[in-house]
Image (tube, rainbow, N blue to C red; front, side, top):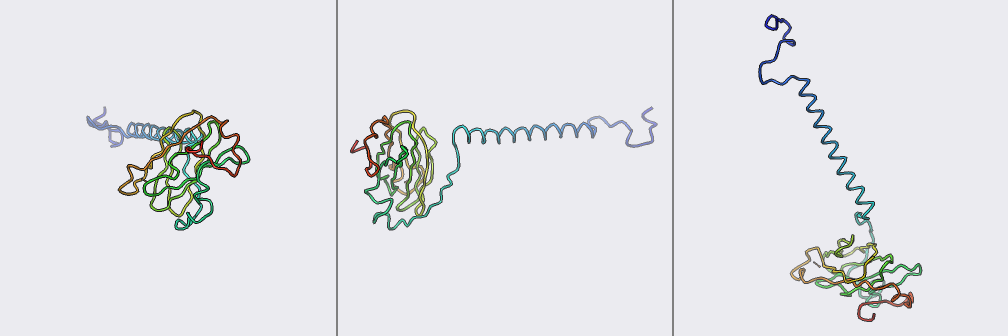
Length: 196
Ligand code: CUA
């Protein structure tokens, strides 16, 4: 009979007390559930990274923000869209309180596009709505992002980093046009929305 059992480990437990091996089983199940959730979250990060080209910006290139206008890559004459020898295009622009220069970017569809920009003053943000382009634009550094536009049309490009009292009015747009419009452009010319 249970009441006569002398070994305390073998006596029946009072009502409401859960046996140790059942506690262990429950804990093991919850550990498995938590590991499963971690696995799913890691998989989501990896799958979106691979299929949607989501990746942290990794370009580190320094530039003197006080002399941008004096020459070099970010001189005004070099702004806009340039066709590279391999057929891809590079867009160069500047973010400043409270404008992007140029305010409208012209790019060809179905073509690799590289944006290169820097800030002349505060920290700004570059976001192109409906694409994977989203980067901070920090004075002293060149921000570089690569993308490709499959659909023609007008894409909004707001500054998405608070940069001062005029932040909410700081936005530009990207005009995606048929590829053929860029065919005649030589590598030394720059295309923009005004001279399309
Ligand atoms: Cu520039 Cu906000």
